[in-house]
Image (cartoon, rainbow, N blue to C red; front, top):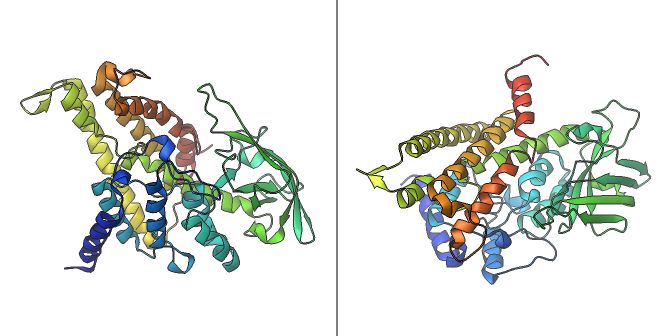
Length: 396
């Protein structure tokens, strides 16, 4: 037996023994595990599963063991993902700390910063949010005006961020601030780590039409941030900001491979159930063609991501390919949910009531949510511009 096959067998046995049965079902939105200083648990098995995975470093499986990670190769991490999918295991922990901040900490952080922040991210002890967008900047991220003035051993920070996802639940925020107002637009920006519990930091939820408050305005008023909370060099934060966005877009794009709702039934299975079969084929020819095209595109996307993972293991950073993943993955996920609803027919448009199953109501909401995936982290149009300029070399 090869070493990878042995790892697979060991991983499968460990997951079978340690993943609670209730954690092998699709996770409703209110059972997503974010961690943090004051987490809420709908089920005790959520914390148990997170703690068990974190004890092996498998909440960030490829990160070095010295910081609490799993120390796995990318190939081993893929095996772990495959075995989790096969068993239906939920993600033990999610958040911006894992997918966005941790990779840039590993690349740009000092040893002291890595030792301080990475273990708490991996164990789910701190929940992070992202302080990028501002009211006057919009998609022009480099137009930010939040200021940080170095005063001896600390920065004095004043600013106003917007669309800060889940800031009212977060413990800390990684934040872009302008530290040299005389510099060129993309220069004079620094990357700071700020504790949300400090006096002067305030998150105000933005009430959406759905009644849910996911986004916030975040106000930072005369907040003293220790100098050692500067990530990277002073006035060189734009480089870190771009790299973080690459990791964010690559992460968001992954929903095209795994499906936005973890554990969602494949559209062809729903089509067989609701539309029916003729001679072993989906009865509706148009839907059958759409599903076949989707299945081929999804397989090609999965192979492309695998190729990129092999390149990453060789030391190549995500680069502009993250824009390709973000664009194609989110658009692919929208197609997936369109077919799910097409297969369900009228059962796919329910919002409440006893005539609809829990899965049908969940899929309707996830179908709507899939539209936002093409906006967050940079719209599809922004990604196409990046691909045109940085990959294809087309003129402005």
